[in-house]
Image 1 (spheres, helix red, strand yellow):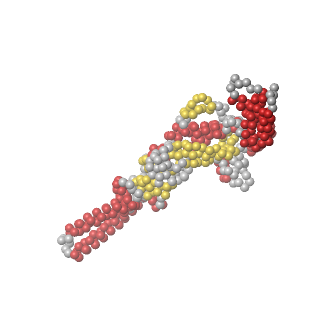
Image 2 (cartoon, rainbow, N blue to C red):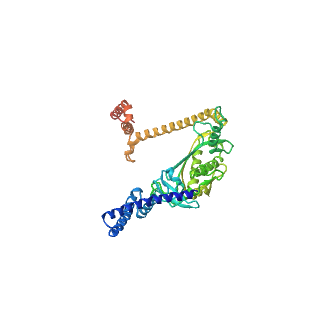
Image 3 (cartoon, rainbow, N blue to C red):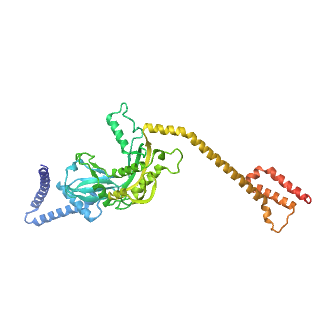
Length: 457
């Protein structure tokens, strides 16, 4: 029925064009007949027809480059072909893809003829026929053939996916008063997305954000974000299909954006199961933040071909293991960037136990820290006293170092040299000069008094 309707539509368009062409011929014949005999002006009529078709071709070639963003001669020729098909009513859909989003006219969805796809610098797509995939198209313009359809679209920007419970909800709470069954099940589903269990059987729920992109280098494929046709094909063709859901269900095909998120969650659960709750949240301040360590280990497994293995008790082994997760991402054309772990949640009973443990242990921890601070203070005080004595001894005796070792000083000269050392120490330190102004004068007077005395021995 559809093929018959399509054939009828094409015939109508051909008839319409033939009618216009026949109308042009009749006007041409009428003009020739008015000016003279048809036979004598037959050559002129043929010339007029040739001029008409030549002008039409030039017109289509010239304006075709303004209708579509073509860059070279082959693209201009295809643009002309599209214009001719448009005039005949046998053209296909025209798509515009911007930032990974498809824009189309509803009327174009039923058209199966040759069409055109225009993509911005942040978009790519894969074309297919009803029986096979044809390949990837990137930023710019692409001409489709009859029965071509878009199998999938890729946004070349860095992607970010977040999973886990909402900020304001308690994921472990039972069904609340006034909460519908559907809302409760949705809340539990969000909790189960990132639910993990520690080595001692404690449930932990987190909020997880993962960033990733298409496996391509910036600037590759005429795009600042990077366009790699093979990666685009891997991403789209490798998407999972749930055959239990109908064809018109949007959840039938699982988006490629969930693949790195699911891998990250699996590794996160694996690492959390290697530690106890007390190891993740120790009573005392630990030098190693286990959550940061887990994040680093996850990133290493998703960005490197090998990583150091961790045993069942969270100890890193001196043994490298091949990363299957990294290999899976490479095969899917995805490049992992980083992850963020936030907002850890526990069941209410565990929250209360952690709070009670903190309240009962904080005084012990505070007293222990106080003793450590007092010990450090005492050590620093003794060290400061020793340093002060050393500085004083150096400042007082530095004048003695200017004399040759063979010089024999009497007691009077020795005393004057030591007093001069004190004067220099005070005068060379601005703070001492401001505090010991009177003492400086007293020492100066003392030096003069010693000099005025006779032999001190």
